[in-house]
Length: 172
Ligand SMILES: [Zn+2]
Image 1 (cartoon, rainbow, N blue to C red):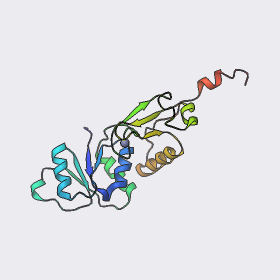
Image 2 (image 1 turned 90 degrees about the horizontal axis):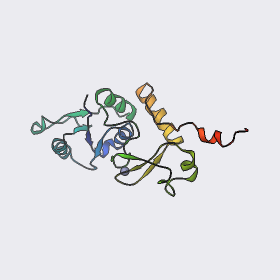
Image 3 (image 1 turned 45 degrees about the vertical axis):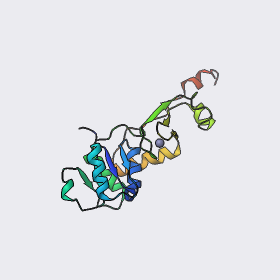
Image 4 (image 1 turned 90 degrees about the vertical axis):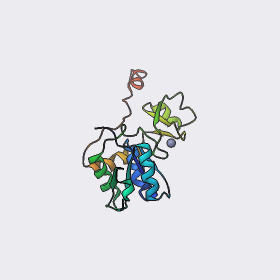
């Protein structure tokens, strides 16, 4: 399946954020009218994610996914059941939708808390807004939210075991 790239408006902002965190490419046009979303979708080869039941004839060729459920978890489950993401979980910025770039602990110096940089494990920064991301209790909660919403385990980045820490303390 080819990945489905979406465009939506502020009424689905939380869903857009969750889908980005799951690896979907979701552009958010705040305050856009349905016609504007349809036009953007036609221009960029995207699918409109909308609460609207309307679909003007002029835009009949544009793919749309109608969201009827008010519950974000149910919506994410429904979208994940019919569309392929553009990347892995935590590969896109939840704020601006740009791809995240894997960064080294050296590059992260001063950008993330010291304990996070020292711990090892994946660090990312956004290629659009520059925001830094790392694994922690927030992403643990997010993973649990997704597994609850989807009703299955999902591939999720992990902090590698601390081999080196053990080697530097041989007598413990
Ligand atoms: Zn960003």
